[in-house]
Amino acid sequence: MNRTAPSSAALDYRSDTYRDAYSRINAIVLEGEREAHANYLTLAEMLPDHAEALKKLAAMENRHFKGFQSCARNLEVTPDDPFARAYFEQLDGNFQQAAAEGDLTTCMVIQALIIECFAIAAYNVYIPVADAFARKVTEGVVKDEYTHLNFGQQWLKERFVTVREGIERANAQNLPIVWRMLNAVEADTEVLQMDKEAIVEDFMIAYGEALGDIGFSMRDVMKMSARGLAS
Ligand code: Y39
Ligand code: FE
Ligand code: FE
View 1: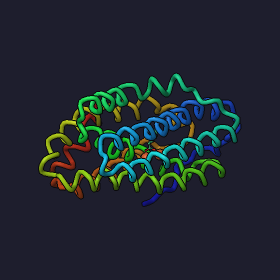
View 2: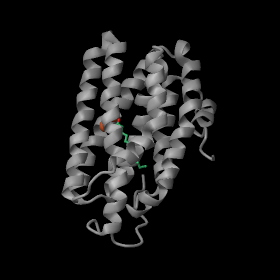
View 3: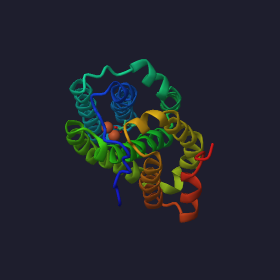
View 4: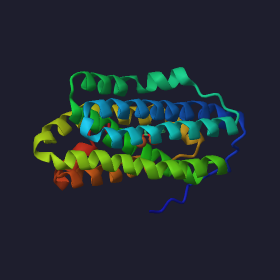
């Protein structure tokens, strides 16, 4: 894919403007990695047959967390943790509620499909505009995120007939939240020169491919992945 960034101005990674935007985006990433770690541990308890694999995914998320912490340290940025917690509150609330109800399908859709695709899209778009240190870290991380997406994709695919409606419901409930989350940090992603349209495009590709492989028709994929996009 063409990833020539339409960078108008050269990035000054040390500027106050950059570091201020980074304090929120990096905090979001850290909170996301922290929650992803916890979510895979929760899934390991819900799915004893896959506990070993899921614990490995959780351990990877913990490494991602540490990697992105070092990116903030490298730029002498203090992540805005309260901002990030509020940012993820709704999505995390829905995951926790689904877990409490033993709703594995919704948990898988939220963490292993939606959040992983969000991460893949954001990290792919960040890599070409990241500082050299963060680029190395993020390149390593994004490979793992595809592994995580694959796990959820495979699990849902194997039981498509029984989980199909649950996936549609979880999608309708949670995808609009993610589109709102992306809109909410538009000013900050712009400072980092992360093109929002490119993030949307990358998300659509990863999410659409996953839904198609799981068993949805092209028509369903289009309908589902645009859910809440315009709002
Ligand atoms: O599986 C994972 O590691 C996912 C938790 C990480 C998601 C990180 C969310 C990135 C959002 C970046 C914000 C800019 C749009
Ligand atoms: Fe991760
Ligand atoms: Fe992940």
